[in-house]
Length: 290
Image 1: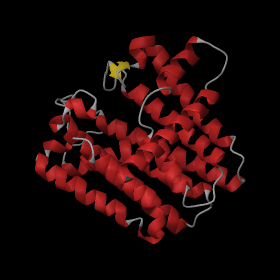
Image 2 (image 1 turned 90 degrees about the vertical axis):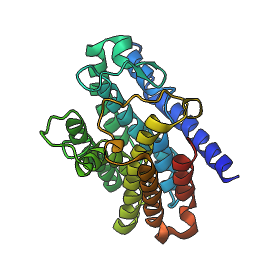
Image 3 (image 1 turned 180 degrees about the horizontal axis):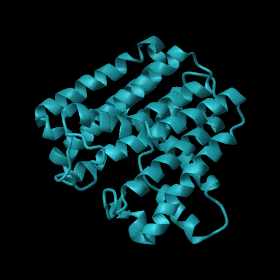
């Protein structure tokens, strides 16, 4: 029953965010806007959107403000995937079961898609009908999340451009920056919208970071050990990359996912039963697919 409820919530949030993104991306037709829509709409599980929605349920937040904030985060997520797929980055031909943006529209257009999605995300946050302090905190938080000390730094590490030797510790830091920080911001965003205390915001951000850590570990495990028919995507795509399985056995990696999940759940203790949405989501998304 809990799984069914979480699934229903996920589908409802994804549908609402999709409609919001449709409105945001409804500019006059051009090849650039076609490529932007192609890259953003109709794909992904919208986990980050769900985290923003679920954290906002702990506070009194306008649904429209939540959807716009979640949409801004999805624009950033889409930009990061478009650029991540480029030949000079991961050189991926497929994304969400269809040709990646640069394969469909060309490399130059794909670069410009990412360049256009970033300011559109900030424009979306700037248009929120909330207190100026809240708006600025969201804009500043997202800027820090994706900048040279956040997502961009993680991508730089992933490309091996920092001259670091791969250890478990450097891989953990790389994935914290490349994956975890956006999950952390997505979860904290609901608390920022709700005018929550620093302590509440930090607890939710910590939950998101730990969820992101476990999420990436589980993704590495699924790529190596998962059932393609169950998880719905090809396995063994990361055989030439450094993953957590370079340092941990499949059994130990599963155990680490489970312990990290418990750490994430503990960060919600101050919310009591009101933290159930986030707790059940973490269990559902990290324990179901094999």
